[in-house]
Length: 83
Image (cartoon, rainbow, N blue to C red; front, side, top):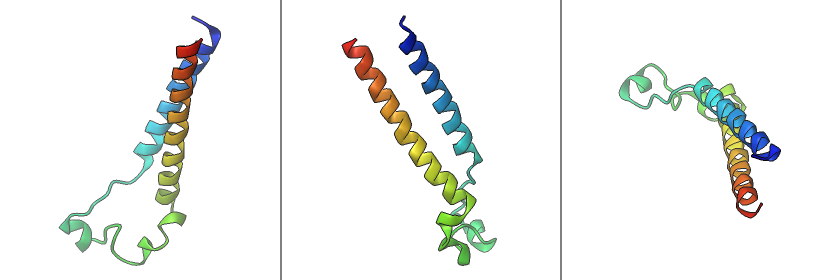
């Protein structure tokens, strides 16, 4: 195996661990009746400022990390295919 294969493999493993941690840090969605009664995420004034909350920032970070992960996987595939 070449050195770049080890590097890409390590980067992919590290990225997948980071994505897993960020996803697990997010709060779960409670859209049942009990969530509405107890003040779930859709109830109240907090739903309009979702992008500024910690959960909103984690969602945005998750999306970017997944895009980066996909680009790394695509690049690794093309490198392994043509080299």
